[in-house]
Length: 188
Image (cartoon, rainbow, N blue to C red; front, side):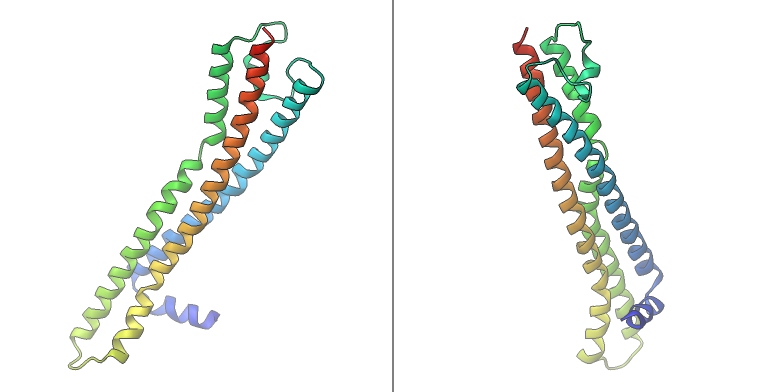
């Protein structure tokens, strides 16, 4: 398997190698964004969930763990406008970087397709010098060129999945923050 990959990379053109390098960087970047943001969001959600449960169960004031805490002071009456601005700020902060996953998922198939087109053009350029070219010569060249498209789709699958998972976590966080804000406003 490794020998096949090394043979492919040795025979690939410069553009194909650049395309595969770009897609590799996209994949690494997608995983980094996912693990980093997921870790932060899981912790953030846990704090907000605990804070909401504290507000509901003990009928107390907002928990020190809540991010909404920085929007209001302990002795201050919570206003709808202040809490709404705090919600917006917190959700914006929680969702930063997630749009990159959307960009990666939508552009990586096109980058892969670009590599495939260039690979096919390079193959046809090689075939033009040969007198008679049959299907047995063309098929392997085209299948090698399609590796770029497959790599682009592979990267897009992960980026899109990560984008959806993180978007769901941001939505979950938003529901906890909104519920806390509604409780605080109703107590005024």
